[in-house]
Length: 353
Image (cartoon, rainbow, N blue to C red; front, top):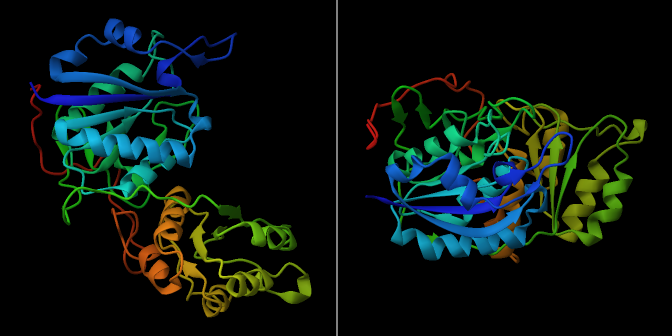
């Protein structure tokens, strides 16, 4: 049988309790074998415990440990499944996609909206679909949820109380697991399997909103190494000095201090084009970088990694940020709507069929 690594990190899937008491981490492996015994008919699954945390506790230091562990383990397996809480799942998937370059097998992250031990849990099907995706899906880091497979660094959590909790607004789904399991080819390998585990987490993610006083982030500039700005639309923000909330002093001082600024959009579809409006063009003149259609979570992790590997070269950092590494951004102006979520690619029957 093919070998699949199942690495448990925590999250709702492995929790116990619930209304009226609070959910809490619980023993996962015993529940897994009792509730999903057919999972072990699909593959020779090796269970490994990485952590047992609520995903709100996930931090960059844990991403580094996780990526290092997976880098050591993946060559021994035909696929890997990482169980994870949904709240920070997109952040972890983005991190692993950038840290594990050209993985030798699929790495599939999954979780659930309800614990595995509950009768109406979505965890059982998510786990089965994730293992099938680890056996037959593309060799990249993905998220499997509600019978769909998403590129890990393109996904967003969009719902709290429904099973279709994730979406990939700017990238077509990589797999649909219905009566048939169908998968897209995914990313092409660009070299050997390599680990890039270094991160500089001194990055601030700032959302623009009406009423935000730029003096507040100005005070934080001496304490950060990089800034991600979630702007309006195609990359807009206030620049009128007469209204008293212009972002230009922030960009000017960031440039003087050598703090790189990356702009992404608050809009879920399409992306940033700083050349389109006056405010974006003014920011470009101060060295601000457009993040194209990267999600805020992908842009955050990519800037952390860029600062760690290009600490003294603004030019190399800019090239890194604006060049796709693991399919996390669209080259050129990202204005084309992706195919519908239910789109199917070339059909490949799974081994279970």
